[in-house]
Length: 278
Image (cartoon, rainbow, N blue to C red; front, top):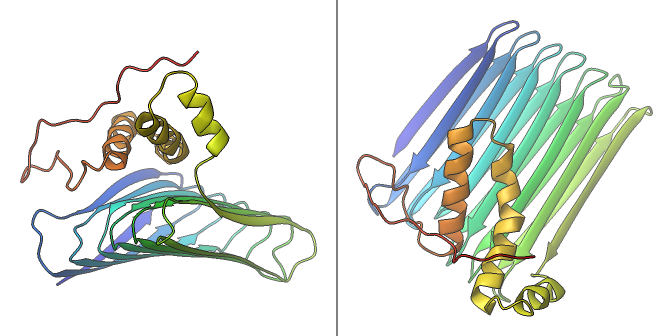
């Protein structure tokens, strides 16, 4: 059992990026309880990347609490590659005017894994903006849940809030639940939300098959195109390249541990067959 607490204070007019990883180096019963508190002062900028690659015997609870001052910007990108049981709770308070929060998330779950994302964005001050985009793929008997809550206080006029949850279920046994929720007490706002749970587009699969791409590769290409959008939001170029590779290999079933970890190095890399689509 590991209890970890992080306190991050980003000062006025400063910027900071953090990459936080939870990886399994051995398959043992484990419980990790992460608590991260983030305070952004006036005009501060922070990018928070949370990468999770755990084994099936792990239980991971990741709780993040963010308080934003005037003009601050917070960007979070949470990506779950493997999991036993994972719960990601992200709570953002837009306390002063012109604060912005952009929250991205991706989960790739199979076997009997369970991934739960709980998002709560609280618009307390006027003229603030929040944006949420979460995507997920569930295979085999995996389960996933997205619960997104946007609260707009009575004085939070001129609020802009957007929320979207997009999911693909690959089997009849996979279970995905999603609940976007708006709680609005101001009358001069722009807020929208939506969620989808579906399967791969049969017409897109047919299009790729008609151009000589086998069914297996066509399926991988569509899943990669769906999931890789979340990696493109990473502003650190080496990290973005690394995420591209990890998503590719995860969708091929080869990624069980981060091969860059110094405790478990490997030279094996997955690459798609050379495919040219015109």
